[in-house]
Image (tube, rainbow, N blue to C red; front, side, top):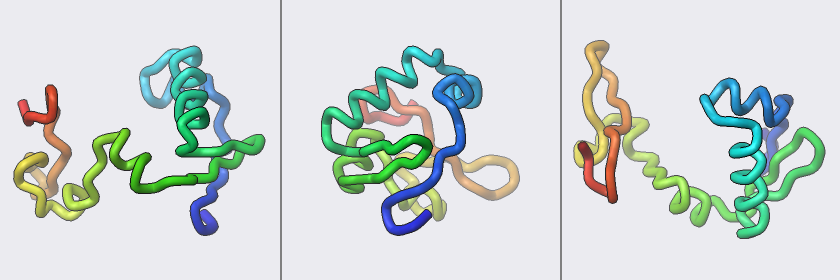
Length: 92
C-alpha cells in the first residue's frame, strides 16, 4: 500500500468467493463506492479517496481492533476481541 492506494490482485468473482457474496453484488458495491466518491479504481489498484466517509459507510471503528471498544466488541477464547454483530447500531 502506498498512501491511500493499494494493489488488489483479485477479480470481482474472487472477492465474492472470499466474502460469500455474488460477483454481481461485489460489482454493484464497488460501483456505489466509486459513485459516492469514496474510492477510485484503476485496473487492479484501489485508491481510497475519503477514509472518514468510507469508515462511516462501513460502520468501522478502529478501536475494536485493539480490544478497547467494549460497546461494539466481544471477547473470543484466545483473549482477542471481534466486532460484535449489530442490528440498527445495537450489539446483538
